[in-house]
Length: 319
Length: 128
Image 1 (cartoon, rainbow over the protein chains, first blue to last red):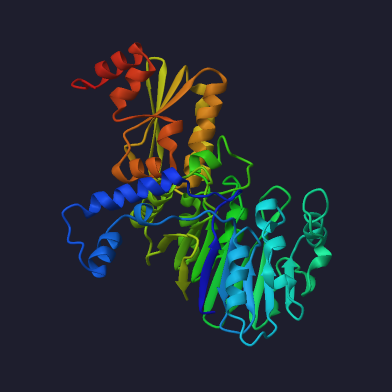
Image 2 (cartoon, helix red, strand yellow; image 1 turned 90 degrees about the horizontal axis):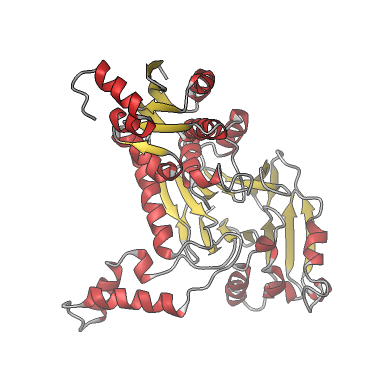
């Protein structure tokens, strides 16, 4: 595997940057530019680069969609949130000579925010393309067909011109898919969700979203530590604070940055990427959470450091 | 967790664990703390001055303890956090759901006037 690209990182519901939010960022940039040389493009770029991420950019608003670059010709994608739409457009732009494309799509679960991108996934409309949708839920195909039935959507699932296939993945068993080892594991979430462990020689990526961790069950924690074992990258549901996740938002099916650090440290993972951001958090709140998570990693560091990042729409992580 | 010591100041029980409260020791910490919750009067103070680290599993034990006490109108007060533990409380937002005081004297003052007086009497020079 060569890298991961995030197309949708927001939890539960897509969000959009508002006019007021853009104005706030512009004002921050203009304030930072006071007294600075502004003549060259380099001057302008330098001013922007010195701004905090929340002031010069945005974590973005699409719901879950993560692409894994396997190094092969096929596309690997985790979940079909609203980020699937821009991913599909990018994939269309990469078509060479109108050749057919194959997409392997891995579903954590079937909640709305993880399936809503499919009706807008342009490659699925292209005859000759192949879209293989994998999951461990028995209702996988039915759920995707149902979301396009009246009165929920005007265009039926049968409109797709690509060959649409569904593959059930037995949890706990390693499947070989286009040269990548793929293993799913049951997670705690209403209606169940599944984490994915992708393995290629010398490289492991774990995608674990919409997953609550009951702290009173050490055997549950141990299972996840093994699932994350020696991962190069763990994409982790860090939607809530620890306090919220085990008090007012207990049983809501999500986890925290604190548990993400602990699991990755015990598993010897190399990189924790905070994911499935709370939709009520603005950019500054997510950036602050990232800084706190890095500090937590620093003060609890074991034998080797754990890299911590926060996913944003457009982030690329090389493997 | 190496050990857990208790002291009584008037109507307030002070429980002082030491060492690390992590995934290896949280269960024994919970087993030691749980029976003390019924012994405590209107307040139980957790003196954390000897606690070097607490993980999510340990924090959960504190939340359960606070809920158990709250159910009978009693309260949990945590005090004496070491710097690292104070940071963990802040990052996990536990400082928002638990009552946290800087010192044992502050915690006993939160508990009752009798507890604070007993503390000052037991340890001369304890102004706070």
